[in-house]
Length: 359
Image (cartoon, helix red, strand yellow):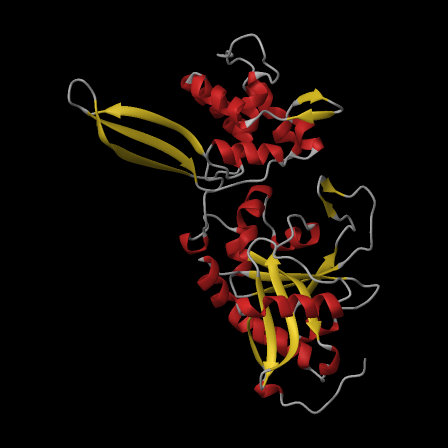
């Protein structure tokens, strides 16, 4: 569609959509965007560009892509840092200029206005700022002209595999152009460096397990005795512990969260962790099974197994933090207070060991 010329871009405003406007936003996106409307994915903000209350364009910024080789290499982060810091990147998953509003330079103006305010908007809504925004452009339809005009950087192409419910597709689709835009001068240093300033941290530390790490986990728990009765045991104790350990490493806390993580494992991930094969697929232990094993297992044996795993896979840590805490209302029979000393890796955020002392 040819661009119209007469529009004072200085009067264009970009703002987040109000709750009562969400249905209109989705209707217009479904009607006019070639990919249709998109539900909210993780942390999401929908924007509208207006002039004198007239809607000109719509944008959606949502959760970043879990995997993108060219982006990850450009940032320069390792496997663990990547998974723990994806929340600091947002994906421009939709951008639509409404049919009657194709004015010259409008699209790049809207992107520029979004860039100026999205860090603050993200901080207010989700409790932490963004460091970078990304988008994927289908080269069979577009060449990314508006992103280039708004000073986004082309870092390469995807491999063409699409994310599916069970992981990634086996066949390649059209490789997408990958554009990124850091939101401050030290964005790359923060994304790839350690430790991450507390201002950017959200939730518990988490990592993304590699295939090698998944396959290795059950072996570290093979020497641990099974406290359960012999009958009815479908899942070996070392597999249950491997799944629980993997879930915690990926940021899960609590029996339900561990169970939910296990249920979302792809068939390949279940196979790597040694899950029980039943009804033509690998099944995972239930929440009750995970709970029953964890509350009955010998803590010392579990701690030793985890330390051995850390010794092999925690080489990312260049320095360690040692911290001690006094347990409130924890006094032994002789009246001495109990203290816990912990050693945590700066880079991986993993606990290497915890020791109890009494004073």
